[in-house]
Image 1: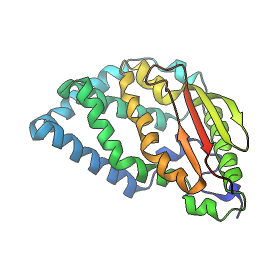
Image 2: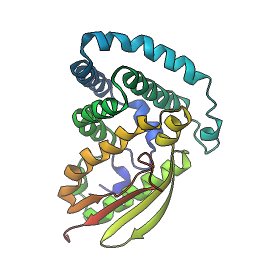
Image 3: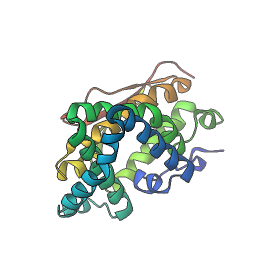
Image 4: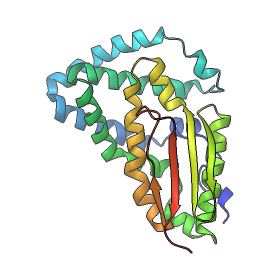
Length: 232
């Protein structure tokens, strides 16, 4: 096996997120409803569809050509990002912004791992390759290249060495779409999902995930850093 044969090598999230297995999609919906109902109760949950309808109607009038101008042509992915923003905004109208942020973080506590496991190879698949760190590095560089081609991210490589791979994302469609729709906070849970998933995923590689800022949290960039903690 080589790194190019690993699941979704060189494919952007706009392709993989819109083709998730049905079982994963159902789990995400089920867990999301459970968490929202726990916090809002049945009355709050029942208010969401009407609020979501109004928000979707409002957002349909907003021009996203600037996002498409970056090269993002996958309309199914754009629709997915709009729908996620709609649901976050509707939840915020019922619960308030701070509670909505907390609710969507709790959702990610439950779904970030199964979601990312459906998108990425498992650590055990990487372990079959000769150079564990080198293979992970090559996989991630191919991922960022694919993301830029697809119009999802723009980035610069800060370090590419035997000790670390550090990439600063300077543009992110996951952030830009909610920002254009007037609810930039809707993408914060996506940043949080990285922080839920990556530490456990990277531990078998002898790597740690470090990030000090994200665009969604009003940083200058999303500074992804994968640091090597041991050789081998």
